[in-house]
Image 1 (cartoon, rainbow, N blue to C red):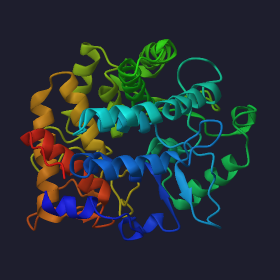
Image 2 (image 1 turned 180 degrees about the horizontal axis):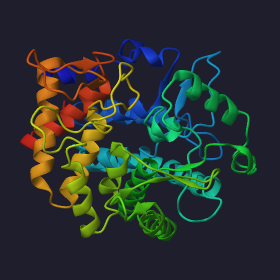
Image 3 (image 1 turned 135 degrees about the vertical axis):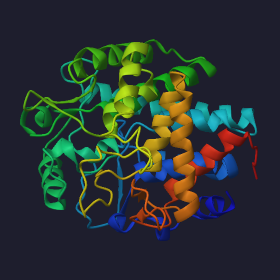
Amino acid sequence: MQAAISLNGGVRSTRYLSPVQQGYHFHWSQLWSLFGKTHTHWEDAARDFRGMMAYQQPGGLVPNFVVSKGSGLSADLLAPPLPAILLYHLYEFAPDKRQALALVQALYPSVLAFHQHIYTYRDPLEEGLPFIWHPAESGFLAHELLDGSTDAASWNSLLEAGGQLDVASGEMFRHHQFLVQDPMFLSLLTWANECLIKLGGLIRKDIEEVLYWHELTTYSINQKLWQAETKQYIAYNLSAEQRIELDSIRAFMPLVGEIPTQEQAELLLRRMESTDMGGQLQDNYLFPSRGMGIRGSDVLLEGKSLVQLDFNWMIIKGLLRYDFDEMAAKMERDSLDLVWHTGFWDGYDPLRYESGPRGWGYQYSPKTASLLIDLLIRKKGWAIFQ
């Protein structure tokens, strides 16, 4: 815990950005770092969150990248819909509720405008299933959404092509090759809508619009993205009008938004317990971000079977919403064990080696440290505000 606080609670520094992020940083990673800081340095977390929301564009979009000059990245990439979830987290664990309510009053309109942007410009069919135009908008980098391609060239090519198309005018919808209704992005959006409803109730805002989004998205995910044959969720590419079969953790992410029925959730649990996903094996850690049959040397941040604490953290929360306490406890033990033995890596090899677990990527990940803090505090019931 002390090591995690030291890594996550200090002054923001590029030293803590992964090598793949030099020259820019992902709001996805930076937002995660505030979940732990909320417990230990609440005022710093609130200030940092205000700073991130200051990058919001006039139309409501919160960009995924904070870009240094000359990086060539598109400013139109959405941040995954974490702001509402983080704002509720800041309220939930605030040592001073009056101060927290003032923060909610100040930032609620901005967070609501972000959701309005998503539903206005990313849901042209009005299904309640806003699309992403690049895998980075879901928080998961290049992987099976790109037809199995995980190379940097494909990732960058898609980024360049999409960056030349306008979303607001409909040009993106008419011409881009990658318009994916993704269960991971949509599950976070559903969870975020739920948080917006709670926050709006706290400050007596009209939440009718958010309730409509929440109900429509929940219904449509189950109607369109649930695949009865394989008993799990799939993605859908609007531009190609075809399903994308998933062999990754994103197929289970609707648990965190409490989207599946109890029966569907039990089917997902059985799939998680299967040999392919490693749930019944004794020689691997849970939960590999892709099926155990998909491995390779280029596993770093490519979604190839790595165990990553952000995905585990979300799935654990989803399992607890359905009272799947045994699997949640198993995932929690594995998550803590990996960090204890190897440190705060971007990700971890899921296989158990005689020499001990192996970390991958950057060794000083504030995201991993942040979510470890949250796991431990919730597990132990600690209160360590400073």
